[in-house]
Image 1: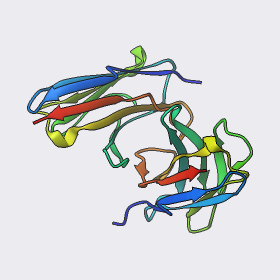
Image 2: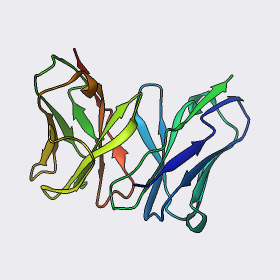
Image 3: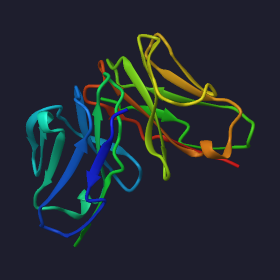
Length: 108
Length: 112
């Protein structure tokens, strides 16, 4: 099956800092989503982005499908951004393979 | 609009018992997928249902099963529970084919 590698595994920031999270995947994909899991376990869909670039407020994402990687940018980070960020590519419709995630801590 | 509803939120079962978890999707969402999350294995795909048919299946033993009803609500069942089945079970729904999942809050199952 598809292999997913996320980096860095852990990231600690001061409020207001910017960050870039990376996701490498091993196969061609027709689906790729980024999620944020908050400290209560709720998974929130951030982007559906199998290719191209999207922006939503302070967050943006870019997927370069031909090179098999995706990036999530967080600007002007806030304490509420803390949690785990997952990249989840898919090669077969709805079946997503989740990476191990990046644990982000934003300190005030 | 109402979100994805999973019930129950918490469950404690004894080894050997069986359990049924429920997922009610957002109105208009016909695809329901189930995932298991554990500290050791992370998030793993169990199966997906669409129009009452299992459309995709992960690498889990036959003790894990599911079904979907005509109103798109889905249930998953785990029989002969093992300690290793302790996990957060999450369902994710979408209009079709997994584009833009919405996850429920999950059911935390503890097997003792």
